[in-house]
Length: 198
Image (tube, one colour):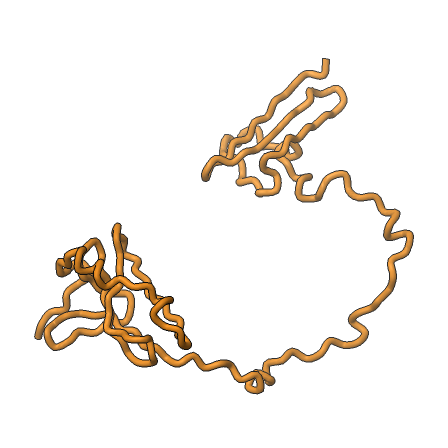
C-alpha cells in the first residue's frame, strides 16, 4: 500500500509550463455554465488550478493546485488517490436544476388577516410632537455614568453610535465637562476635559 502524501508533500512544476495553459474561460464557452467553487486556504504567493475538466459538463473531475510552482492538493476538500499514489482533489459537477415553484406551495405563509393593517391618516397630533433633543442612543455617554471610586479597571467597550462625538455636561455650580471617544484599531480612547465655570 502506498502512503498518501500530505499537503506538505509536493511535486515541482516549472512556471513556464503553466503560462502556456492559462486561458480565460469566458471566451472559451458560450453555452450554459455550471457554477462551482474551488478554494485554496493554505497560503502561498502564486496559486493556480489544473485539472481534467473539459467544458464543465456534469460529472466527476480531478484537479490539483499549483502553489508557488509546486503541485498540491487541499486536504479539507474531497480527494482521492489513483493507482500510482498521486492524490487529486475531486469535484462532482451536477446539472443546475431550477426550482419548481409548485413544489414550494406547502411552504407559503398564510395571508395576513384583513384587520392587521389600516389606512388611518395622520392627524395634527402626529405632526405637533416635538422631536427628541438628541437620539436616545447618544444619551448613554461616559459623562452620564458614575464610576466606582475604588474601581481602576478599564471602562466598558463603548457602542459605535457614541464614537467621534463631542459631549458637554454643564451642571450649575460645577465644572463643565467635555468628553469624546475615538477608536484606533481595536483600542478605544476617551478624553474628558474639565473646565471651571469661572
